[in-house]
Image (tube, rainbow, N blue to C red; front, side, top):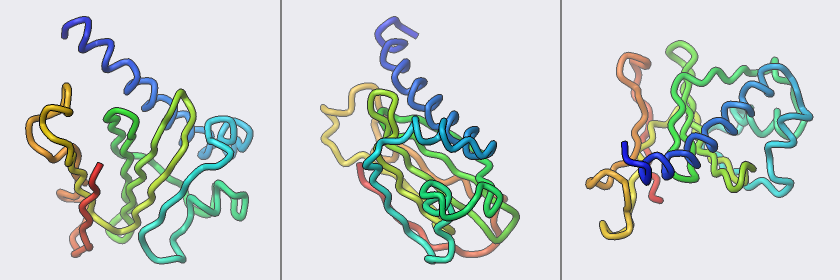
Length: 156
């Protein structure tokens, strides 16, 4: 890896570490640490049944970390976005897409029981250091769920 490639990876590694620190704080019920990682005007989007808005209830203090425990199975950083997915048996699958700016989480998009494909729709000339194809990330559902779930295409 060249020094310019390493420099480009450093912000992604920091973004990934920020999001991993959030999950650790949530698992421990450490509201102060979690709060320090989140922007005061955190933007939140949700796709799924309203009864499954666990992250929103945890982040707003409407429930404890014991109502639903998010155990990340895969964490991938791509630029300012950090993709986290987890599954609990055959009935629960979730994806969080976090946006991190200067070490602070500014946005979360939460998808519950939905497969996600993320595509980069920018012209190839603007995709410095990214794969030549438009797909940046896909849910890893192989062997984790035997039932059919809806799929969404997320464009960034």
